[in-house]
Image 1: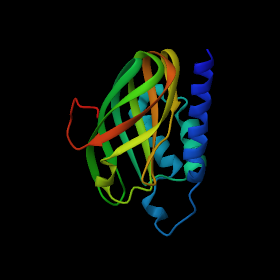
Image 2 (image 1 turned 90 degrees about the vertical axis):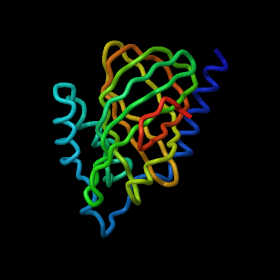
Image 3 (image 1 turned 135 degrees about the horizontal axis):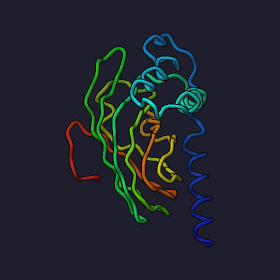
Length: 192
């Protein structure tokens, strides 16, 4: 039990340390290239359909923490874990100034995590300098606790780019883990 508490404390410390400097972004001249909360909610409502009741509040929280994103991904994913886990997904990256781009993601995780889930996913992307900059690993800490369904948000970072997955999942999942998502231009089974 003591190791569980220490791991959770370590994970919380990492979140505070890693996301602290990523507070709300200051306004900049390229503001029209970013997505407003209303644009994100409308895109999410069309994508999630009847599952989107909590979407507006989750998007408002993300925008309150990190500002307005300059890109977002709509897609689906599946994952599972028994201590170690894997996650695979695919979707489309949307930007206002660089067009749309098909992306795939996969990644391992390790922690106190058990279960499986499938999710429709909207990922808000901040500070994306160009579309191909998404093709890298984004590390973070994730936690899930739902039976049958749920809605949640996490944050992953790499090279000053922040990816905030918002998932509406179905399945049975309980736990907390540390891992990463690797974005690629083609589908692959290799999560590393």
